[in-house]
Length: 434
Image (cartoon, rainbow, N blue to C red; front, side, top):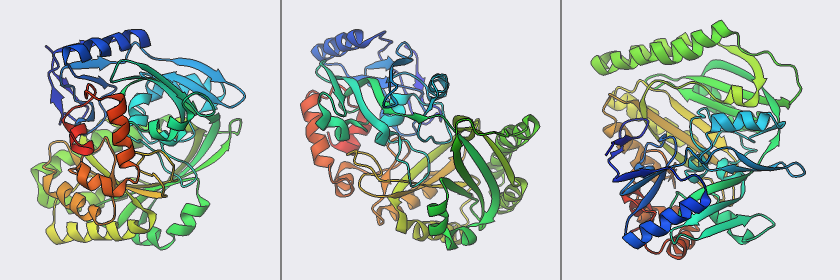
């Protein structure tokens, strides 16, 4: 039996078997067989979640054989995709058809089923996360039945409930996405300070399609990113290859990995290291097709926790975190990522019913993250924080019920579609109840 590990290496398992069904019928047969035998079934995508959400108990399901586009509705730009399709594959398949994902984050390694199930997102107050773009799909429920749903079609009342499932109701086999015509992005990246950015934040969010910044702990310095959408046939000026290799491969990965190692070995140097790191990244401007601008290579291993909070709570949380780092001198070499999205009506979406600010903290994989992360979790809880389902936290069902208005409705669906808890594991029992 082979051991499975997630990307960060903080979650491992040794499933009793690993299965790769080729289609929905095979998946349904696997679930029915497992239900009869009293075995658990857990699908795994790219393993890019930092929580044990994909951790298998008995049977690990790999979706590699279920990849590609099923259908495209040219009138509505709705695209049906097999669940095991990776985002980096999907964006090229869409581009061939003159389409694009409405928004993306800066990592494209995930499968589409993993991205929608964990409420993964990008940034921009006019756009939702992945769950908000799900308008239909197909799932093998925990009873082994095949369930289809679609906005304007069969089981349309389930669209808000099934946009974000945590994989707790069964195994997704297909996802129907609301896509958009292909577009370009013009990127402007420049250093600034958190004080300067927060002072004009409302105007920035209103005027900028996609805005985010990375704050360097132990300093007030940030690196900002502003992306503006353009027509699909707009002229582009991609980043020069030498600049890409220097900034995105050498500075942001190779050199940064060495910096993180130094911070672990000499924590007293972290403040100085972060000041140097913030100055090393200079301003730059470029434009390209959307997915080439959104995604960046990430080779430095880390652990991550991210909270979705009301937009108005962002400054208080960031200043609190900044003051805590100063007060404790906790050595934090990794920047803090801050983003924003529109609200949506997907029951278990981290942005359900409210515009949201996402604050993501990271720690190098070889550093001790516990004190830093624990403070963040406790502090954010006071601001009605909702944790990214795929990023580390210690919240449980008792707390989560207070910040998700449709929590009990979702739990009732779990009882309906997976009464024997074939799809569960310890993490899902923690966040939804056993």
